[in-house]
Image (cartoon, rainbow, N blue to C red; front, side):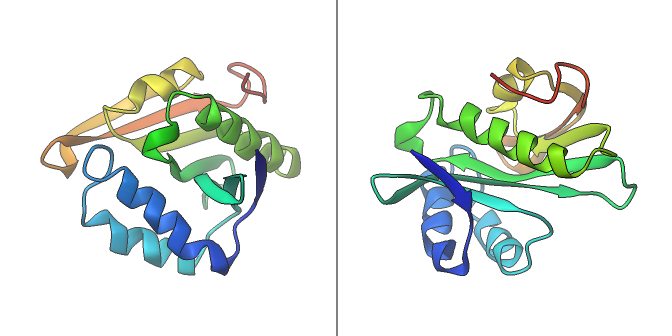
Length: 155
């Protein structure tokens, strides 16, 4: 398994990851939004390869306030979930970004109720829930974690 920076050649494979998680974790309408995101990356975006196939992706970007970073479009292929890939990708995103951005004090994510427990396990707390914020069965769950809440690393 190899984690590397996204390149434009990875675009279709990343959209296919999204499709593998639709409608369980993403609404169909989010595909166009992710496509725009991939075309105008606000920060580093990573892909996880295994056997030459992209099995996960996710990014992180600094917010305008200078002290907050946002996790962006993190996902694992539906067939590879609960195998530790998401935890490894989250650790890589945080460790690489925070090492280069010591001023960051908190990390946030916008996820759904279906992935909320994953982030809670890694020190994130719910800030706000908007029922059906991402779609009919997908609540928008805003979660946050202080940089120092459990150190810079995820295990």
